[in-house]
Image (tube, rainbow, N blue to C red; front, side, top):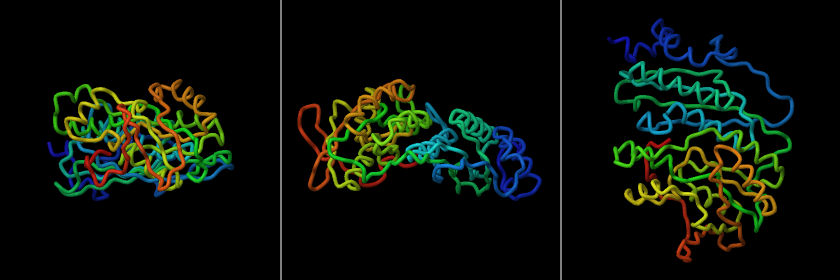
Length: 337
């Protein structure tokens, strides 16, 4: 029946729009800030600290993949962007761009995932918007998410605070997300063994921030992967980074997938990872804090900040050689986040 799929009329602002909201969207997200359905949400903000605002868009294909889906991705991506800024997430807003013909059951499945991820991250979706576009103009479903968080006055993350001798850490295996998406898209035989790492990192980051000024900088290595983040750090700090390949966590199945597709795992996107730069004296404490959390059990100290002119990222390979690590030139894996 036609009412089981999204129609252009569902985006018209009339009775069909109201019916779509009441059936397929609002039941999953109900909370005091959202329920009035006004043009904005009112919420109490802490009296101390700095507000942090971020925005993101999710255009992943396929919409569902091992380990996650576009709904979970939209929540976790925004929560993590706040968390690596040192912010405690307060609220999210979301805009849904629905393509005409999208099954309403698909939408409801995505909304259930959004609700579950928001509960996991302890952050409500307090406002949003829904639009419908013509067939073949919307990729099925696109989600735009904004987030607001509060950065405590005691947190001072800054690339300019990085010094030679600082250690670089990561909380687990790299490249799982991007290669899971590609394997699901191409229906590769090993796809069932790969799972996206998409997860909220707010609790893990809070544990690290308890170390105070010993933590210099946090960043989530999404598009551009670990290589992109390290190159950004080197360029902005004016310092080099020496990374030991043997210490970079990488699952065997992920490595096989990368080799099959001709990709460098260092440049592949992640959605549940955080790169940490901290003082050398605090590195082991930071490592222990990460490993004591479910999202950091495979954490590793992977490198050291060094004097370098020009500032370069160098990978010390398993064979003892060296190669320069750079950002990927373009988009190797489209539509992965």
